[in-house]
Length: 82
Image 1 (tube, rainbow, N blue to C red):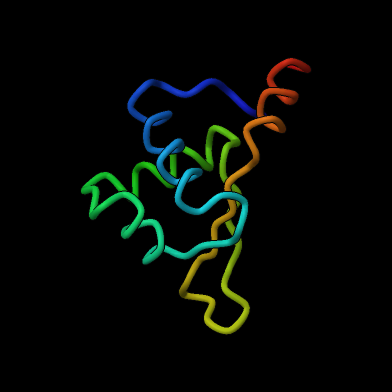
Image 2 (image 1 turned 90 degrees about the horizontal axis):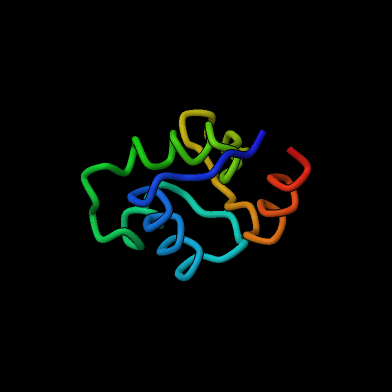
């Protein structure tokens, strides 16, 4: 399920999308993109819970995570369907 984001979270999604687009990224990439935002863990968690971000385990190190932002147009289509 995809739900609309609050303004503070939409701002962070926009920054991540502009810097990283639709390629996989890790936590370090997100830190660089968000300029060491202290709310990084909350941001990634809320984006995932809201359906705006996919997460999977790193294939070589299960302690690490890889992230992929859902495309804005896909998110809009999902929200239209309800």
